Length: 201
Figure 1: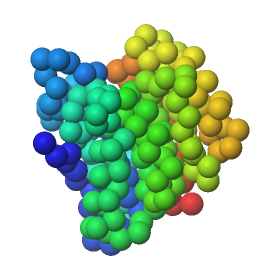
Figure 2: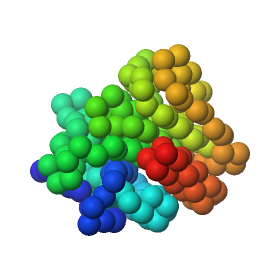
Figure 3: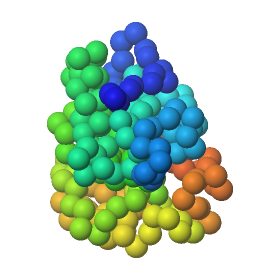
Figure 4: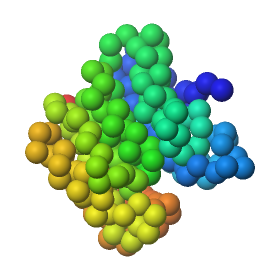
C-alpha cells in the first residue's frame, strides 16, 4: 500500500506547500490507515484552517501507509515520499509540516529535509531520546496540559533540546486534551498563524 496525498487547496501557481500529518496508534487487528479513522478526520479542520490562512500554499493531508509507528516503515518515510511528490508537482517550494500526535513526531523528525522551512507539532507523541535536527527551521510545539496520551514533559524535553540549535517555541494550551476537541479552535488558529507567518514572511 502506498501513502496518499489528499488535496485541500491547490492554487494554480503556489508559492509554498503545507503537509498536514495525522496520528493514530497501531492496532494489530487494523494496521491499515483508513480515511475515516478519527485520527485522520481530526486533522481536516486543521488543514482547512491553514489553507484559508495561507492562500498561496498548496495544502495537502497525508494519508500514511500504516497505523502507528512500525519500525520497518515509519511515518517519517511517508513524509519524505510526500515531499518528493510535492517537488515533482510544484518544483522547489518552501514547505511547512503540521502534525498531531505521532504525526507531530514525524513532522519533527522529518523537519531536517531541505525543503522544510517550519514545523508545527500539536500534542506530539515523542520519546525523550528523540533528537530532531531542526537547525535553520522555525518550530512550534503546541501542547495541551491535560493530555494523558502524549506526556507534555516528554514533548518539552525534546523541544528544549532542539531549541539549543534551532528557533523552537513551546506553548501550552490550558485545559487542552490529546484529541484537541476541547479548545480545538485554539490549536487550529495558532497552527495557521504560525505557518502563515513563516511562509508569507
